[in-house]
Structures are given as structure tokens and as C-alpha cells.
Length: 397
Image (cartoon, rainbow, N blue to C red; front, side):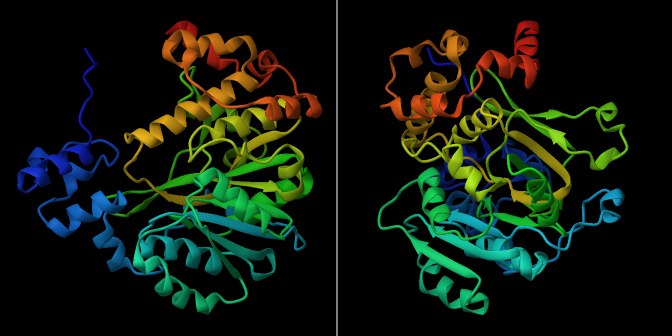
């Protein structure tokens, strides 16, 4: 018998739509949007359809329009920081598929408004076979105001996020690649800390703090300082950074050493991205590429940090991970990671998910050869040096 799973808010909405019922606070389930049942009345059919289509409150998004001001969530010590006048240039790569028009455009407009002109080489949009009409001619028309700074690539077939990002990166000419999701809003002075860190060390890969844009109210809320981690199921998790870890001279602006990245937003030197093997192009759709790249960065001589003075809001959509195609892709991608990077520790994953032993993962010879060519360290080194908490935490459980 399958284990019982608590219904998500999305599944509740679908159930109520099928039954022709209105969805109210009393019968809403809470999942990814913790304020949903408490603060929002899901009786408006247009609102419900927006959630089903886009994973968030599309009616409110349309009301907000194509740009807005968000609160500056940086610590006051960040405001006193001064950055070099000469920094590398950045190519911002944004891939989208069936994104809500206004959320996508707020991503773009916030970048243009809050990024120094001389640092922004270009914004590269990769349309991964979107089906919605407003992401075609209407989008092209509205992007005319940013002519000269925008490149738009329209894939002829669906590639998935991983390969779409590779397509975008191949067209970039900036010194640094910055990958962002298509439902973000950048904050003040978001890019300068990222570029400064990379200018000091081209093997430094850096992420902004991911602030939260709530999916029901679209309120922009500050995130605490956290680091990225994962468990033996290869599920990405946020881990609290203790106050004593920020007791040094930089205080709350101290860069946070992170065992893993979430993957939705990060910056990397463009030449270094190719030097260490970019993304695994044989991975499908999305999922797992963030952990694979994180392990490769650390084990092959790089470093991965989260910078508290860089803040980018991320719209917390409902996940579409329950569909079969997406689930298959995640298993396939995870297995490629496991067999290339975990060494003998892959047994820790197989013990927890035995069915993975017999699942296919394609040809990994190219990635195994890459690891040898780069002279990468062992996963045991990674556990000892970067993420000893993985073994400790699991042992305690």
C-alpha cells in the first residue's frame, strides 16, 4: 500500500474545481503558500485558474504590472560597502516556459532598473517552446524598450531548463554568466557583490540570498541567512547559519560557505563555467543539476558561497514535480550525479531508495572522463572538508 501523502493546496484546488465547488479559507489546504488558507479567499474562479495555470496568484500579478519597487532587505552594514568601479561585465541568462507575462517582465525590468548600465552586458532570454500567446509577439513588442540589451532565443523544440541554459550561455559575451529563474525580482546593488567576489577569484561561484515572494499575496519578504545543503535522498535543503558564524569583522555581511546551491540563481565566471564542464547536457528537463554542479565546483578546485549583501526575490510557485515526465527526469538526473560523483557513498542513496539501483541513467563516460581530467577530489574529501554535517546529521537520525 502506498504511503499516505498530505494533499497539497494545488490538489485541493483541482479537487474543488472538478466538483464545481468554491474554495474558501476553511477548506483550503496549506502547502507551499503558508498564508494561503489564512489570508486569501479562493472563491474567485479566475484566481483559482491562475494558480492552476501558473502556480501563483496571476490576477494579482497582472494588477502589479510590469514593474514595482521592492523593499531593500539588506543589512545596514551592506549599505556602507563600496565596490570597485571597474568590475567584470555580466550576461544574465533567463530561461522560461509558459511563464506568466507580468512576472517575467518584472524580472527583466528589475534587472534593468537596478543594475549599473556599464556592468550589464546583456539579458539573454531563452523561450523553451512556450505555448502562451502573450509570450510571443506581445513580449517582443514590449521588449523593444530594452533594445540593445536583450537577446531572445526561441527554441525549436523543448529542451528543458538545463539544456536551455546551455543554449543561452553559448550566446553570451559578458565576463560573468548570471543564471536567474524567470520569476525573480532583483534588489538594490544585487550584482556588484557577486561580480566583486568573482573578480577576486575566478573560481568562486556565488549566489545571492534568495528572498521570498509569496505566491498568494506576492509580498516581497526577507530571507534569513542560510546555506544550501542536501540529504542522502538528494533533496536540496536550506540550513540555518548560526549567529556565531558571523562574528568576524564583516559581521552579518560575511560570505557564507555553502555545500550546495539551490540552482535558481547564481553567478560564475564564463570561462570557468566551460573549464569545469558547464552543465551535464545529458540531464533532462530540470532537477539535480544544481547538486551536480555544486559537487563539481567543490571537488574540482572551486568554491561556492552565498553573499548576504546580494538579494534577489524568488516567487515561490507551486511545484509541478508530481507529473510523471518530471519525476522520471529527476530520477535520471540524480542517478547520473550518483554514479559520477558519490563514489562508494552512492550506496547511502541506494539503501534509502532501492529501486534506483535498476533505473537507467544513460552514458556517463564523458562526465567520468571530465572528472579525471580536472583532477577532482573524492566524495570522502567533500564530506570531510565541506559538508561533514551530512554524515553526522544522518547518523543522528
